[in-house]
Each structure stands twice: as C-alpha cells, then as structure tokens.
Length: 244
Ligand code: ADP
Image (cartoon, rainbow, N blue to C red; front, side, top):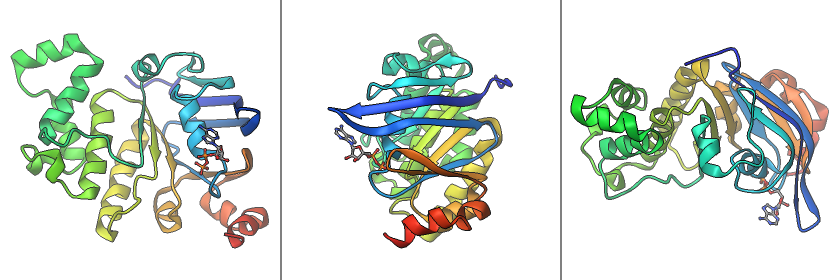
C-alpha cells in the first residue's frame, strides 16, 4: 500500500571504519516519485550509504523509511520494512528459471502468502513483475542463460515481488548495451511513481535520461543537490569531475 509516509529520511548519517570516517553526518531526503541519483567520485561513500541503510555496516545518526528507523536493525528486518537493494553483480539463482526466482523472492518475504499462491497459481504480482521487467516470454528460461541486462532486470523484479517500496540500485546499467540501458530507463520510470528509488550510477548519459534529482557526494559529504541541470552547471561539481 502506498502512503504519504513513503520517503527516506536520512539525518546525520555517519559511518566510520577503524577511525576512518567514510560518511560524514550526511542529510538526505528522497520522496516517492523523485527518482534520485547518487553520484560522486570513487570512494565518495555512495555504496557505504546504501550499506548503512540496509544494515550491512554499522552507522550512527538516523535513516528512517516510512517513519521507521532502519539503523540498528538486522538486515532481514530492514528488508521486511520494504527496503530492497541490488548489487553490482546480480544475485539471481542461475540454476532456477525466471519464474522460480521471482516466486522464491515473493515467498521469502511472506510465507503465508506463498502457501496461498500454491493453491491459486501464479499471483498477479509476479505476473505484473514479469511484464514490468520485460521477461514475460522468458519465464521458463534458467536465469543463468539470461543476457546480462535481463539478469539485472530480474533482480529488480525480485525486489518488486518482495514488496520493496524503497529500492536502492547500485550501478544498474553497468555493462549494459545501449538498448538495455534504454529498457532500464523505461523500467525505472515505470517504477518510480510508486516507490522511492535511489540509484548509484556513474553513467552520465543514463542519469540525464532518467534522473529527477541528483545528490553529489564527495569525500563522505553532500557536495551538491538539485536537478540534473543544476548539478551540471554547478562549478563545484564540474571541478570534481574534471579531475577524474
Ligand atoms: P563509493 O561507493 O562512492 O565509490 P565507498 O562507499 O565504496 O565509495 O567507499 C567510501 C570510502 O570508505 C572509501 O575510502 C573506501 O575505501 C572506504 N571503505 C568502504 N568500505 C570499507 C570497509 N569495509 N573497510 C574500510 N574502509 C572501507
């Protein structure tokens, strides 16, 4: 169910590794329908922010989704609060077909629903996900036989059927062909109005095509935030990207 509480609100997020502060008290708010890109040079802290929100690294400060605090909770509880992430390498089960991967993902989050599904057949949500990710015709193909882009879409589909309402996507178009990028852009545009989406991505062409807003991280701090045009015209942003 969609509510007005579907937003990610990060306040004073701080992550330190053995005294090295990788994320320095950042504030970040992302609302549903505001497709947000998180960019910045290597080592800026982008992945660490996502790791902190999803419970993979300890952090201080606050990161709330739907008014529920995420920090300090174990990974599986954060997932149950509707937070889903992808990794740079898709974590699909290669031996299983597309449909089974989706069914497993759907069942993993709600065992009771999964038992109902066994009686009623394939639920609408899995069918909708198959359509959304463009794999309806590939449902009986083993995930291992999918093209690189299709595996990434399947992983996003798995988050959708899990009921994720906050999607954190780590470099979703890395290694994709031009047409795969265009399809991924369509997929993200279709998802965004209904969910909170944060994308870590280096590809500026892709960013220009789909981002509603951009947050630039540098050395663990928010350097700039705004629309794509505002970010592109920001001299501080131009400076860090000219250096790379
Ligand atoms: P980005 O995703 O923006 O490239 P990261 O979040 O991966 O940056 O890393 C931010 C900084 O934190 C880097 O300096 C990196 O070396 C450091 N870092 C990330 N993970 C760890 C870790 N587990 N232990 C120590 N340092 C880490």
